[in-house]
Length: 79
Image (cartoon, rainbow, N blue to C red; front, side, top):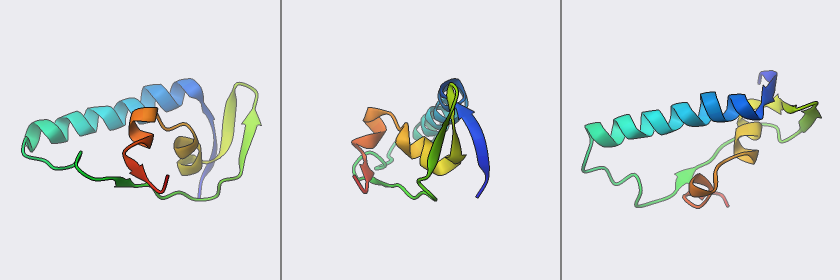
């Protein structure tokens, strides 16, 4: 695992924005996709996250899972 300081801005502007972009590309390339018919599997590392000023540090997957948008939370497992 890599432990990095991560700001709210970097989560939104890098990780989530990139994820939405890739999802849009996939849906455009595969219009018959059934990706929205089921749940996505969420896997993460250590859940130990530290507040670091305006950001957080810890396992990146745990930080992303902790900050997942509601629309993605409703379509993923485990809940």
